[in-house]
Length: 170
Length: 188
Image (tube, rainbow over all chains, first blue to last red; front, side, top):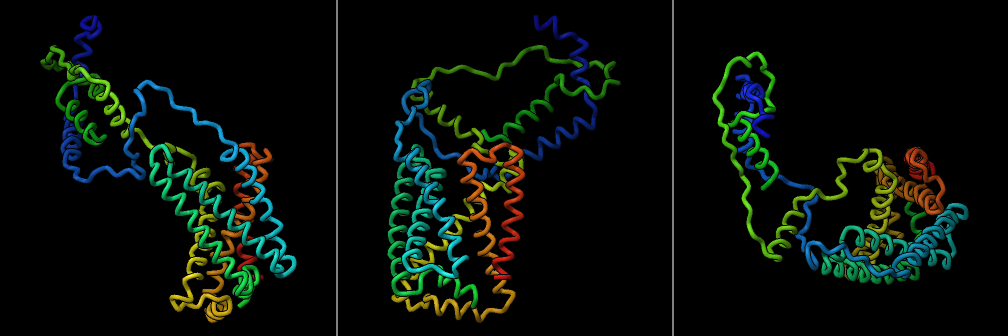
């Protein structure tokens, strides 16, 4: 069958190549062989493993509302409550200590969940379980430290909004 | 085998053997060349155990392109999209807050002065241009995160989630945050 399809004309056609073409091809082949720099991907994939056998379907993770829908709603409530807390000092000039503490606490929660989102997105647990644990607990520790520092700042200094105002108008 | 080497091998094969893809010089059709008619097969089969198969699959997966590959998308979405800049600005602010807070706790031990009074005095001593630049550097991300945050909360209610609307409001957010940032930095 192949011998019929491949007529001698086609073969001749295939064989016909101009000198320039041959030259270019030969040069390209030679040049590429001498490329000594390795290809560098921006984000090379991490070492991978296969759980079970090659033909197993991807596992469906168990549902968890406290990590899913409840968490999502809570995130939005925190983000939404930041709007009036942010607008208020612009309208009133500054916040009273209670509202300022509330603003600090809300910003802290908002930052914490924001960093969590970033870690969850870029440090997948199925591929880097140990790094994920390290990052999440590192974040928890950092948030605790920042909470303590904000408490210090609120109680022994003038408060976040007043401090920003003083620096801004300095 | 890396892609470059694969390309080289293919090129060498092309350069060394006649094939049907180089047909530019039709005028030379008349000239006959002797051709080899024997077929060569460069593929060999080999028996693999289940473990070998798994290892091979894992190895092949390493050659997959990483998804999402940013180059294939529209620049407007990936480079100027409100979504990623929301994350950049938020992470920058929260990162600054975390860094400052940790430094504030360490300050008494390290002998730094990070109280609001000394910070305000230090900032006040800067020339006007530096003050304006620093203020804008803080005010623009603040304005962007605030305006775009409202947009994202509206998205969550399903408002303004059409494709064209997303693109349009994305540009509005850039404009509004620039104006807002300039106002906060120089007129407040």
